[in-house]
Amino acid sequence: MSPTASPFDQMPRYIRVRSGPDDTFVEFDFAIGFPDLFVELVLPRQAFVQFCENNQVQHMDAQMCEALDADARKWRYGETRDAD
Image 1 (cartoon, rainbow, N blue to C red):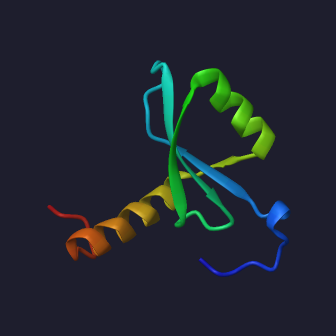
Image 2: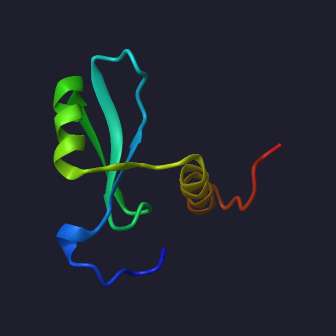
C-alpha cells in the first residue's frame, strides 16, 4: 500500500470481521491507514457497533481481503499462488 499524506485523524480505518454473525463476541482486524498493518481485537457485539461508529470504519472488501490473505500465505509458507 502506498503511504498517505493525511493527518493521522483523517486516515481511513478498516475492519475485517472474522467471527460469525450470531457470535456473542466479534473478532475482527482493525487497521488505520494501511489495511495490511492491523491488530486483532475482540469486543462484545454492542461495543463493536459503537467502536465502528466512533471510528467511522470501512469494511475491507473481498479484493482487499484476498490480497492480504495472499500476502500472509507468501510470508508464512512461501506460497505466491493458491494451492491446488
